[in-house]
Image (cartoon, rainbow, N blue to C red; front, side):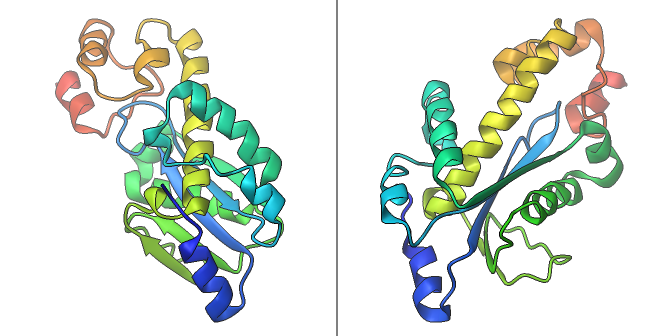
Length: 208
């Protein structure tokens, strides 16, 4: 389970309290946006922190549990931001730059602004003049990153369920844009729609 160890270390060593955990959802999908979230926990409000005790890496939670925790996170954090980049932007810039753009937008929407960033994975946001650490598998280590992972995942899943109504032949509500056998079969049958990432290998192969 994620803890506050990383956040408390920064608080104790650098006297920081506005520490944002940052994570994304959808980077490996072949359709839909990449969605990033940033969360600042109320490190000096123990009652609110207690309400976040069930927060975990979103991948370890059922969809129902994620939805429940989404509301709990939103109600009890000091600040949160969610942003996305579209499939068109992913094709134009590449997945890593598009991912960085979504993360930056989520971070810049935070009020108050963060003093330090804990970013899941190996990502570095060089365009942001904010001290930061990359944390490999951070959504399983840092409570801030885990909270961000839930906001990003639920926000993206909701978008994909909405896209399923616009493009009903692809099963987006089930696979959320990831490369399943069923998804590939619908691509072969129907061709790509506007939210498919045409620069990704499965799409390039299908379009040949």
